[in-house]
Length: 94
Length: 94
DNA sequence: GCCTGTTTTACCGTTTTCAATAAAAAAGCT
DNA sequence: AGCTTTTTTATTGAAAACGGTAAAACAGGC
Image 1 (cartoon, rainbow over the protein chains, first blue to last red):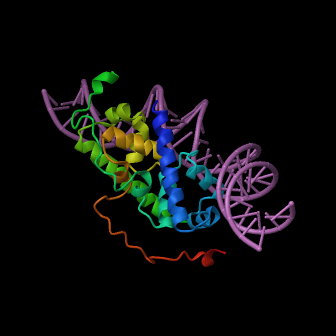
Image 2: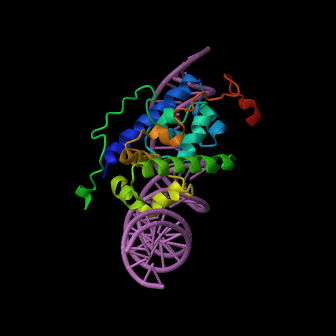
Image 3: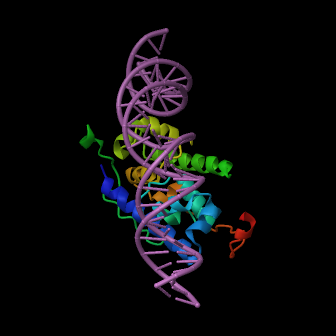
């Protein structure tokens, strides 16, 4: 269920982390030391192959000095297109 | 290292989820059906006792129709107070 | 009191993260 | 070409997430 969505989510989160790290001129090893997450784990995360935990996300964000929210989605690209503004149709999941 | 920080992070994430859920008048069971995450797991998450994965976070955000970034931190409360704007002192971690 | 709905907690089994380590692959540089 | 740095991939073991289920605690309402 929604595994496609998950893969895309992780891929975009990973690419955002990678971009932020490269913008700061850090290597995986250096970010590993700053964040306390091993370089091998960081590689898997940045390539979207691992579903990291939120505390790991926050530790990476702290190490990169970026808001954690900026890692999970494009901050600027708001305008969340809501399908139906109100009403949760639980009915289709009886 | 920084386990205190982790606990606080999870607690605030959980309370934000709970508030969003209650604002929408949903029960844990209903959110469980909408998000695909069990009600027992949601209870642990909302009370800050579980370190959820980012895909779980995104599924909850989707179910609540809220931006995932809004769950990990106060969107309005930007103005991230950066200690030292530039320079990563790796030296203290030889 | 009783009953009903919601939440919390505990257990079990499966899956997954994560560190540590090592090795292999990729990229840079002289 | 060689050499070095960086990244990727794989393996092992421990810790934790997650679903499912069930039981317990905590509400309100009659």
